Length: 300
Image 1 (cartoon, rainbow, N blue to C red):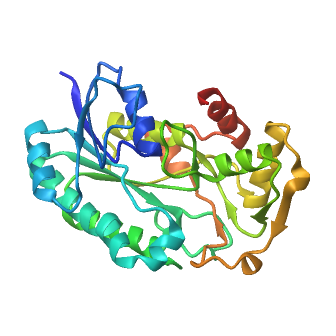
Image 2 (cartoon, rainbow, N blue to C red):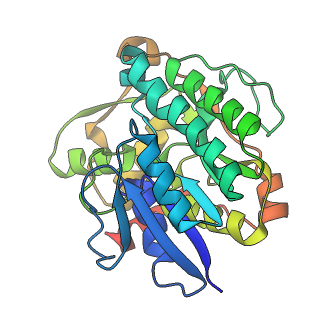
């Protein structure tokens, strides 16, 4: 019998990527939920349900009719500066909706897979973070995602939390861009860009994050896992590697410090992950950044 999987937030970058990977796999019966019409043109026969997160009774009814084995929540407000300004809206999506899903997953006896972030950490450790390090978010987005983790742990019986870093990729009809798309497009248009040189991340190709979600299903994994690709780079170094990969003019990339840029929300300076748990328990395979870019380019 096929495993029934619900992907919530199926119109987003991770959501569409998951749908594309699971859609033709006969081991799974796939259902998708998101706001607005289905934006994934590849999955024309997808069992898709348009949802309003403020009307959870309707979502709860639909989930009860599906009776899923797994619920994957790929829905979040991820614009860090917007979260700093629109705190109530951020809470509604990143915390309150997650709590409702966690409660409902327990009632349905479904495993709840939730996506979290490196931004629950303050970036001051001086070394890579493992799953048991103490969170200390420095912005409201990170705080909301930490609160989401807590409501999942408190309200879901069976759950997997996958924390990730700086996800990039491309799917159909995207509402938001990401670092790789922005750098590539800007340099192709011969536009000068200012890129932060004192923030460090482990950029994660969305296809590999989707693979981790599927591994969590296959392994019936429980608990918290750190998921990213394996290369630790400054944002400036990331931009330079994108330019090299696409043979675009690196002289258009201007380094700038966090202080000079003056972002609305504070960012953690350095957030790398220890990936040992995911490698050992999930069989996760992290990529180099160039390998990720190669897959990204092939997907374009």
